[in-house]
Image 1 (cartoon, helix red, strand yellow):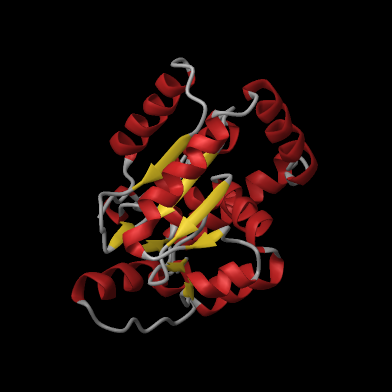
Image 2 (image 1 turned 60 degrees about the horizontal axis):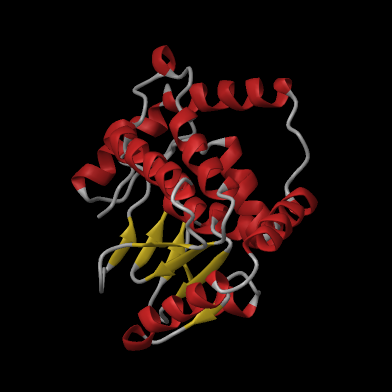
Length: 237
């Protein structure tokens, strides 16, 4: 289900680097045709096991998010199927999002008792705004494509039999325009909208919270319940 582990992330970063060197005018980021899941998010097997291996736990995730955000040409997310966890961050890092009506977005660390990377939260909040981000995260519930379209977070909602042509036409339109102008506009928009610099103290505190969560009984319970396909019983310990 296109879950992200370190090898997959490395392959994606390398692909973006190749595209930037091939005079590409636009990038379409998509799963296979008619996918039921665009991406299941982070591969849970790649999560750290506890405090002993927390250092750098989100480095690869942050690198991929920054690669998509900093790609000098427009990146269009063509989304068929549901988008979970870290995959939402990647979708929200794209410049334009086109989805089918059946698509749902969900970020559910609270269902598992796991931490979420600070850099990823910044991307999610920048796209959703704090109120929607809090509801998605605190309630661990899915938002459908129409709701996000209504808030201007998704650019278009298109029927499955039309979405591929629609996105290809959008990419073609971009490719016919002045690439230097588009690159400059993308950078200017990023400079205006990106969150302020995060001080080292904030990052250190976030890593300490992540280490605490990964060493908690709730984390072990969340992962155990997921594998057993049962409802977790969190104790706040």
